[in-house]
Length: 353
View 1 (tube, rainbow, N blue to C red):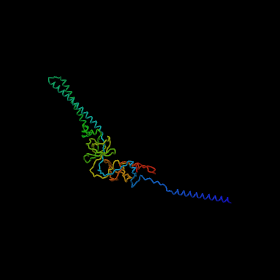
View 2: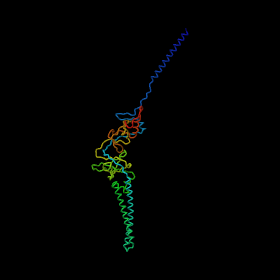
View 3: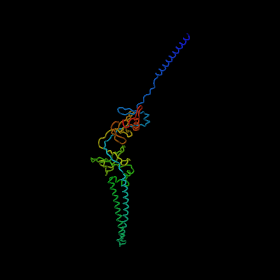
View 4: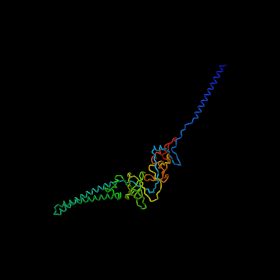
């Protein structure tokens, strides 16, 4: 009897201890599940689109590390112009004519010296022959023939030099001819040293107006440079209709390069903004510039109908005076914009938005 009671009592205690253990485990498990989770905040979106404008967000530290600098936009005025075309002249033909001319002058000078000597000899023998025939007729005639031959050579040399002068005027005009055939010409020295180049520009002067003394030119999509009138051009470009003029410009543009010329007009000027050249980035086949919206955000705006100006480009839309435009690091902003974002499966197409 006592044994059965003891076994029954022990079984009951074991069951009670097991139930207590299960209760404690459940309590501990509930407490662990009730602990607050550590939530990682989502990363700030770097690239957003606001009202159709692509925005790039960068903190101040990243901007400093990337060398991003901004500049205030200023108002500018633009005078409508007539656009025409031309090319950089090859100076080698003119240089060759110059060398030939100075060589002809040297030949003419030597021929004149020979004429002077042979003339003196001829005159001496003529006087001696006339004075009781102190020299033979044969000697007298020989010195006469030598003198006449030297005179012909001198005349030929002089004619050759004049022919070269005429060739220079026919091909390059009187002004360039005067520069090229003057050994002390400072204007031609600048051309020889490539400090300046010559341009043949075709001007559409159908109304009979004079060629502008100063125009703007651009080559290879470079910034504009001033060019100054030299003279009308004796030769023209059969592929372009108009009157040809020769201009000079202080620019190391390669011979034969096609240039764009901008002729000033008298029409009313247009007000707009000057975008610095360093602010321009190309994307999707057109130029853009980044404007600083706030200290950490930059918007990419199109430069529609840009016109080259000294130091940058003139635009009449999208930009306002007083805005800050990125002049250093704009390409880095574009790269940041095109870089795949977290969770993105691909990158943007660099040829379009």
